[in-house]
Image 1 (cartoon, rainbow, N blue to C red):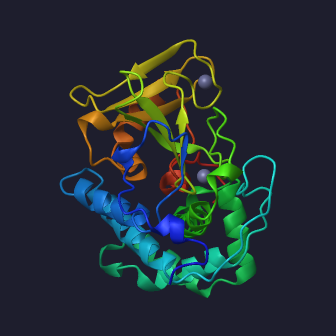
Image 2: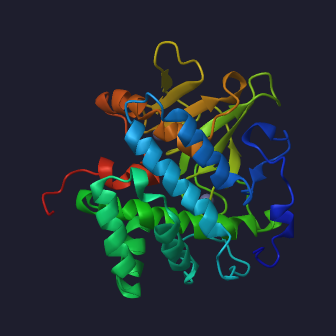
Image 3: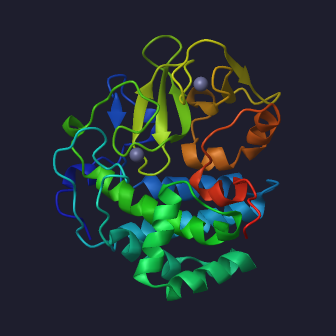
Length: 306
Ligand SMILES: [Zn+2]
Ligand SMILES: [Zn+2]
């Protein structure tokens, strides 16, 4: 089913990560391809990877996200707003995300799911609307305990479906493409940055939203957390020239930057998950970031209350 008003969002099959026009300060997600390409990339990253089981589980989850998109009710979009129109803190959530969750739980291929994920699936399928809304609030506020990690992966996936669908239906004119580390559509942090060739000889960087899959241009060599351009340094694994961690001494934050010119099949969220080893490396140096939504509970500090 095509949601009303989404003709434009659904009519651009050539909307790939590598095809940024230089003039795109903001690019809204393409519903036809966003989750399908992500699932494909996760499946490609998995074989032989030290996190193979985890990546295969997420590939199944993202494939279910793709299927869930097609079954959403029409939903609602916000009217004119100041700031990010889909900011979860100010937007009144409709039930679309819970419809997406039910569909993900029903459609996901359970063959490769670990025990914890199977238990979480059963618990969520039986949960009340109120409990689900409370879980959504906890995820969106970044208040996830390690004991909730398995359930939160499904909750995050369903919220991504709802937010990505809304973002695809926005008009670019509604968005303020200010040079910010936060998504212009929903205010969420980015999951990674991508540098594509073009523009200056060094190329443009686009950040990719962790929630709604919108991407937006952001100055290179500038901290995505505090905006500092001083004391930025880079870390990378030997032999991986397509990926660096941009580390900021001012706020001890870091973000990942992928270089599309060297690896055209990259997908920001999938490749972030495929390179968690770099997070361990820079984490040991004391740098921190906002975690990928699918590792939020896993990477949270143990709080002893579980
Ligand atoms: Zn967003
Ligand atoms: Zn900083």
